[in-house]
Amino acid sequence: METAGTAGTGNEATVGDRRQLINVAYRLLGSLTEAEDAVQEAYARWYALPRGRQQETVSPGAWLTTVTGRVCLDVLGSARARRERYVGAWLPDPLPAHAERDGYGADPADPADQMVLDESVTMAFLVVLESMTPAERVAFVLHDVFRYPFAEIAGILRRTPAACKQIAASGRRRVRDARTRATPAVQADVVRQVKAAWERKDIAALVDLLDPAAVMTADGGGRAGTVLRPIEGGGRIAPYMVAIADKAPGLELLERSVNGAPGLVARRDGVVVTVAAFDVAEGRVSRVWVVRNPEKLRPWVG
Image (cartoon, rainbow, N blue to C red):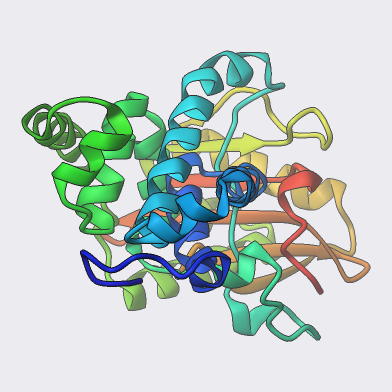
């Protein structure tokens, strides 16, 4: 990216921006496919510009970010209606750690391999982002996660910088109480205990590991069998987990990083069929997010 006052150098100046744009778009949309589509649309608009316009553009990267933000804003505006038509609960796409994609090296063309896995992509964080208005999500993510100035965000939202600051503050209030409260080491230990109890089909042990007010949400998208509504209460979740194990002989549970946090992956005949993410508070699991929609499991190999 070039300094202010320097004309851009054309198409070549945009090559190194794709990784950043994918990271922005995924956090804005929660979907790798939609994120890649948004970035592709931004590049298509860039390449459609006359050569003179490209050369006059001071910062191609900033131009692409603005356009990607506007595309994502449009997608978010229509997402609510699409989610209402979705079969069962909708959850963000789960992301594997790059090193855990068994047998495959990093692929620069794969959006999953472009992701920076930090606390801004944990399932708990993304689920809270889903509760925001489109404007809140764009303002909060761009400013608080990526440190974009409100003057630039104003160009995306088509509002004043002061208004964007207020919108971001509203989103920040939603996030404040939703960050994972356990350290990674504690969360990993609890998830390991859940795995062991699940494999033993030990309902009592699972109940002890689950908060009494725990909630399990599953996403099958109508393509894989699962509950259509959240299950509330550790006393109801534990028997359900054991029932799943009873119905799926030969299921292999593996400890894996899910969106940068300790989670579990279930494989059958070497194919990933379920990815589970957890939120842990005070030594117990408070939330479980289970993704079974095969469309969302494409980045998982092994």
